[in-house]
Length: 238
Ligand SMILES: Nc1ncnc2c1ncn2[C@@H]1O[C@H](COP(=O)(O)OP(=O)(O)OP(=O)(O)O)[C@@H](O)[C@H]1O
Ligand SMILES: [Mg+2]
Image 1 (cartoon, rainbow, N blue to C red):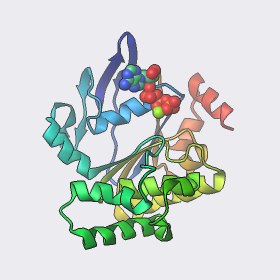
Image 2: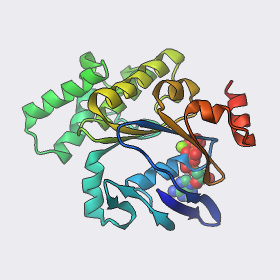
Image 3: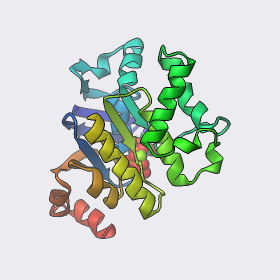
Image 4: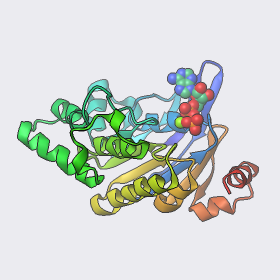
């Protein structure tokens, strides 16, 4: 991302964000509430377009792609939305198959196999017939994660994958992200407030404040930063 600017009305949310996301590692995006983290990652798949600046993914200039080309890009980029967004009226398996039946050419039995494989990835192979309402918050996150990798993306964007979970579930979901990175080589960009999640997953971190990246490096570097906003953030999360 290069020099991204994005305003909504008179509110300037992104004010010149530049960020490199290296392949095959996990980059955590941190920052206070309302600083534009969700807005930023939506630019990566063209769910939002910048007022100014450029977004490159796989050598493609995303902010100039047409809708049909964006659709193709989105097949290679999984997105775990803040809140998960499972369909309550569908079983777990139907939630996953919904994506496959629309976006893959696989037949019914190959799709069923792929669904089962994704569920086993998140250690919930026995939940395929359950409805989301019957699952715990941590299990729902893991199902949403399974759904976001069902098309075997090479990039995964996660918007607060562990928010609202108890520490045990935070650890489970975070360790799953690490496995996706290590076993499948998926490049991960993960927005998180959660220090435990960042500690487990983040190879690199960056900190957004007032529409800019004010610090980047390892989590230890962010924690040692003398920037007042970071001192505040880590003070509050200590
Ligand atoms: N579609 C939109 N239309 C208008 N304003 C928006 C829109 N999306 C986001 N904003 C505004 O942009 C700002 C940043 O929002 P964003 O959702 O990126 O914050 P965030 O850093 O993800 O916060 P949180 O940690 O609470 O999720 C907020 O002031 C929000 O109101
Ligand atoms: Mg957000």
